[in-house]
Length: 246
Image (cartoon, rainbow, N blue to C red; front, side, top):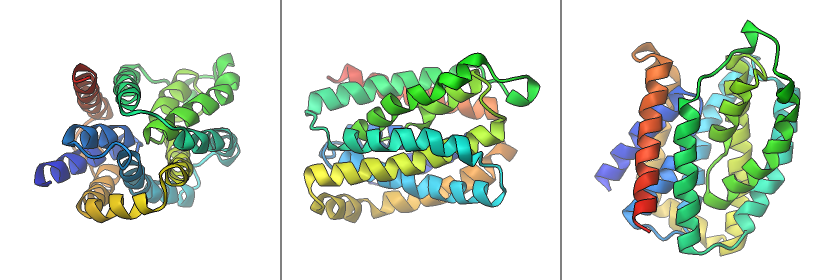
């Protein structure tokens, strides 16, 4: 458990520093630890919620969240995340989807980002809402927030400026995680929540502290590009290890 707590803390710092929750890597680390795969999404989503709740509130107070766009994207994705959480899935299929999604996550974090403040939005930015539904479903199915897929797409299409995209991703992750968690609990029973959280309190505390450090302090010591590369390397390594073990 001590090594897992440290890994969760580091993950929370890295992910919060680039505006995400870390649910994908929490899920993978729990899978590698041998936790029951039915409990895994519940604990990963709970950790996600702890990390992004604070950042969502800060963005809202700073009035940088583009509420109209954020609500449209999240409103489309959240019901799909709920359905994803309800969908029965076997252990092998779960591990395959999780590992593949982690590798894709790492690739998306290495993609160059664009800021809408440096030019007009790309015409494809209007098509982004159509991607929200499959992203939401995948998020609920494997126990992640989905924002880590959404944010690079928003940057590539110059959907908005960098701060607005980070705020949108945080809100997207928060709501999707809540809906995905509800679906998981309906599928496996509410007792799963007590089992997952009861054994995962040290992990929740670790991500709470790490998330605050990542969002408030990490960018002062490492450039954003370096943090993104470090996070991408971690995600891709864990995803590859999961797929290799199948």
